[in-house]
Amino acid sequence: MRIGPVHREAVLIQERVRIPDRERPYRHTPGMQVLLVEDDAALATVVSEALGAAGHSVQRVATGADALAAREYQLVLLDLGLPDLDGREVCRQMRGRDPDLPIVIVSAAGAEMDRILGFELGADDYLVKPFSVRELQVRIRALARRAGLERARDATQVLGRLQLDRRARRVTVDGAEVHLTTKEFDVLAYLCEDAGAVRTRSEIIEHVWGGHWFGPTKTLDAHVAAIRRKLDGVLSITALRGVGFRADVVA
Ligand code: CA
Image (cartoon, rainbow, N blue to C red; front, side, top):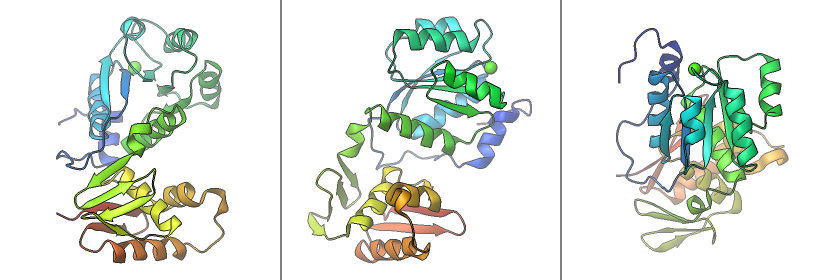
């Protein structure tokens, strides 16, 4: 997709991430039904495509009135600068109707005051333009998890010859069980949650070890090496120097 130079925000987003250009055969839907309230058509297209690539379905509206009239969605991405209504008012009304609805405010205004105001309005999260698609996907996943909307995602996942059962914490290749340690399983499951996309080292460490990380960063490399050895020829884990790791199904 081509984006004109006036759409600087969208261009920045494109530069910072690679949106998969092929459909991933191991995509693990169902994702969430996202209501995208954004009057910048180019930005809305980029965001829709990124959410679609992550397995979410997107309903696009460009005005506050249409946003308030929309039905059947589980999460809202709300631009504050809308042509008709103030996004803050839209947020307030949505929150009034549904106290549990995850709302992410998207705004070009990054001032600390606006940030606080966003949360006072009842928003769950806040994204300042320009943001990366990766950042957007991570926030949405976190909100979905918190809202308990991603349970389906946590069940069994099939990636080529590999089968990952998160409930039983069991990994099989062609039906034969592969033994992984607890942390190896956690690292693998986290990488596979978004196979084909990069997880940064800090994301992995935060997710798997949380506040209990005292070891050297080599510990993560050792876990990845063990997983690679055990899943040789089934799943490839690529290290991106200074960034993180990416898991891909071996074709
Ligand atoms: Ca706007």
